[in-house]
Each structure stands twice: as structure tokens, then as C-alpha cells.
Image 1: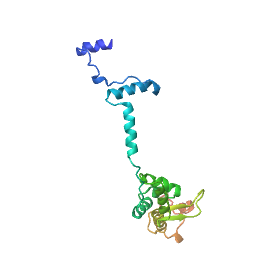
Image 2 (image 1 turned 180 degrees about the vertical axis):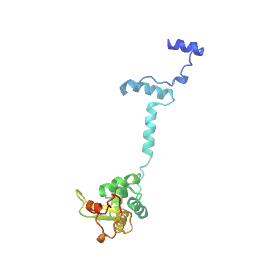
Image 3 (image 1 turned 30 degrees about the vertical axis):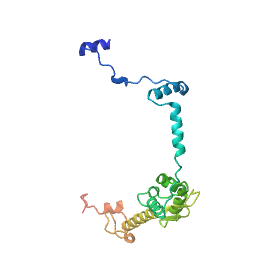
Image 4 (image 1 turned 120 degrees about the vertical axis):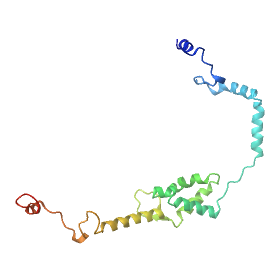
Length: 199
């Protein structure tokens, strides 16, 4: 019915799907049932399925396993400095452990040998900018904080202390030792004139 109305409006049938790209609804077919079709598609594409497997195995055997890369001392220091710096993940976290270091620097070590992760963890935790913390509640291992985080926290605490001792701050009532108490309601009543207006 709808197709007939479209033909009347447009004047011809709609064109078929160009190239047959509209996909049919998927159905679950076990891979074993699909294998024959895949092999036929390979053959139609000019590939011999058995020859393809052999060529992949030959290429893999001829390719020597590259030795994993090792970080130089300079690279090791650079990774540790970055991890502990203001833009590093450890600074965002504020307090970290060795496990947190592994999570933070692991993605940076793609292509390097697995032992390099241990070297980087030791370099980060032994870096002068990794400050060991004591008395951290619920810590199962040694906790650290980046020096940049401690510097920021100290600056904030100093700023807050300076602001609380200001005499000219808006709303301040004088020096901390001579602050006046708020006027009582009795003193406000006594200060009013008989007309009810303030003097």
C-alpha cells in the first residue's frame, strides 16, 4: 500500500539499494557452520586457505623476537620526574603507594621489558620529590606524596592563616585579641531615642 502511494507520488519505483549494502538482520550461526563460507570467500579472493596459513607461519618463524627495550638512566629519571610532577597522575591523586605508581606509569612503558616497571617504581619511590608519609590510616604499605602537592597544600595553609589574622579584612572586628562581641539586644534598645529612631 505504502509502496503504491510512493509510486503515485514519485512516478516510479524507488531505486534498489546500490550495491546491496543494506544488511539483513543478524542471526546466530555457529562458527563451524560459517567456516565453509569463509573458505569459499578466501578462494574467490584468490587466496589458498592452506597456503595462507603456511605463509603466516613462515613469516612468524623468520622474524626474530626483538629483545625488549631497556630504559636508559636519563629516561628513567624523566619518567619519575613526570610521574611526580604537577601534571602527573600521582599529583592528582595526592597520596600514593607503589601499586599506584605501577598504574600511573605502566602505560608509558609499552614496548619495554616487564622488569622496567619495577625499575621505574623504585625510581619514583626513591626520588627526592616522593615524600614518605607516616601515620596514614588504612595504609597497607608505605604511602608517599609528591613534593609539589605538599608545597601546594602548605601554601594554601599559609594563605589561610594569614587571612585569619588580617585586621582589615571585610567583616573583621579588629585584632584577634581585641575583637568586640556582637552588641546585645538590651544595648540596642538603650541606644534608641524616645521617638523610636536611632540616635
